[in-house]
Each structure stands twice: as structure tokens, then as C-alpha cells.
Length: 242
Image (cartoon, rainbow, N blue to C red; front, side, top):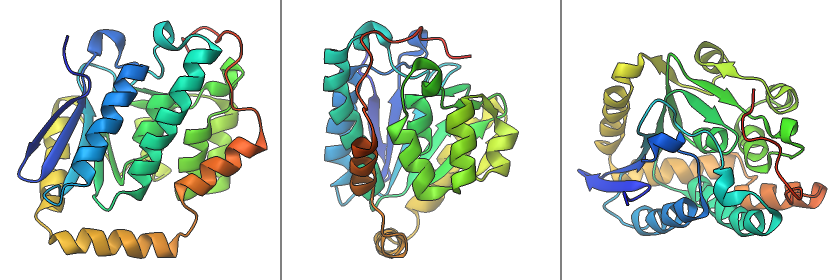
């Protein structure tokens, strides 16, 4: 079986690739464990200068794989893994570049919004559709709260609609929009630009930004969890979010 995600390192750039295109890169517990392990090893490596996250196939990530996560016990195992992944990303002193094409849905939207620099394809859309499944979206809400106005967060999370690439750019969720055929090359260029900066620049900038915006991901997610029941219902609604 293909490693998922596939992780390689070259010239200080860690290339983490979701590689289950036949499943639209839907996330499983095994994927989350592998991601967390890769983050542990790469983000602590002093040679790592940039983390680039991207995906194979026409979709960046369609959310959770409900064949793996359909039920409360599986979801209870999933949520701590997913929470820890996003805490590591939020705490990273390494710049994070994400290239996202096609669908960024639910958990995929949360992953996309973890980027310091998010590049999307012209056919991309982001959708936080958990409300249509009877769920909250704690990770998406947390990233929106950390980085975007409350009005934007409410519109995205309460309507649950698809947000196309041009609107993501206007909302400053995406940094740039590129043709799908050029997206990976453009993302590698941005990652290469960041990798050429002095390593101390990234760590000092990350520390300064943390001081300027003192609400951290762990505190935020803990508060969101206390605000309501974050457990899954007995069964998920159908996986397809329109």
C-alpha cells in the first residue's frame, strides 16, 4: 500500500503529499497517525526550513473517510489525533505552505486553513459543511477565529456553502489562485523562496507573531470543546456535502 501521506525532504523543504486520489484524499485514523508522526520528526529537525503540504489527484481533501470513521468510538479515537495535528501546525516555527486543488471539504478545509500561505487552483472550493451533518466544526472554527474576522467565520460555518477560489482570495483565506496545471510548481517556488531565508528569520517571526496574537490553538480548541458536545452522533449524515 502507498504511504499516506508520502513524505520526502529536499533542500530543507518537507514535501507532505496526501496520496489517496481514488478516495479524494479522505482522511482516516491511519492517515492522521502517519501525519502526526511525520510532523513530530520533521518539525523538530533543525534542517527543516519549510513544510509544503499538497495532494495527488483532482481533490485536495474531501474530509473524513466515513468507511473508517462512521461511529462514535472511531470518532472518539480520531478527534484527539486531529486536534494534536493542528496544535503542532499552529505551534510550528517552520513556515507552512499548502497547495490545494479541487475540494477542500470539512476536515480538508481545516487542513487547508492551517497554512501560513495557502495557494489554490482556479477550480478549488472550500466548504465547512459540518452543520449540514449535525456537527460543529471545531478545527475550522479555531483557524477562522485565529486568522479571520468573526463575520467571515459565521458566514462560512453557518451557511455551509462552497466558497470558490476567487472568493477565497477576496477573503484573504487564499494568498493566490493559479491554474490547476501550475499549482504544484507555484507552491514549490514559494516554498523555495521561504527556504532561502535565514532560519533565524522564520523562528523569530513565528515567535513575534505568537506574541502579537496570544490566543493559541490548544487554548482555543479547549474552549470550543467546553462550549458544546463535540462528539459524533450515533451515525453520520451522508458523506456527500452539497
